[in-house]
Image (cartoon, rainbow, N blue to C red):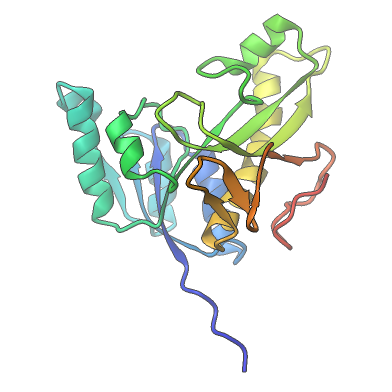
Amino acid sequence: MTDPAPDPMPLVVLISGSGSNLQALIDAQQAGALPVDIRAVISNRADAFGLTRAAAAGIPTRALDHRAFPERDRFDAALAALVETFSPGLMVLAGFMRILTPAFVQRYAGRLLNIHPSLLPRYRGLHTHARVLAAGDREHGATVHFVTAELDGGPAVLQARVPVLADDDADRLAARVLTQEHLIYPLAVRWFAEGRLRLGPDGTPRLDGQPLRAPVQLAWDATDPPLADGHPRG
């Protein structure tokens, strides 16, 4: 007699915009490749298109306008109270354009993931594609990392690297990176949901019980979504 499959992990997604990485998570869940229950999608912008994506998938949505709060910590306290109504085991930031307070981050330490469009620790913050082109880099990419109080400074888990081509502008490069984001974010979330990925007490990510001294790399020439067996190529 085989053991029953574990219950899907409750997940809350925070967004501010179009929600393309949210859509990648929804698609992976609906394909049976991601053992999560997306309990809610929350945005600080009521007009975020990601809320439309979530509603179309039958996922509860909430909007909490940060402009209604005079101070950042008050917004984060209200956000945490809202998040708690959905009892998440994991929360992911998918284009959530707010800097979270240390108190919020500490509350969800080890249960909060983000994806950033650069090969961290390089190019933290905004406008990463233009900065890569201005620097003349030959390689770019995206990183999934645990969130800490340091902006884009949390421990990296998984990266995808892409070439910078001679005729690239910021939009073309961003599109190439985004394709890879849609592969690595569901994969990292899957690892967490399956209990394979955790943040150790020393702040080091652990995958299958082994410390990750450097992020796992996804090969640029991987053409198939790496969710069939839960392992990236490369």
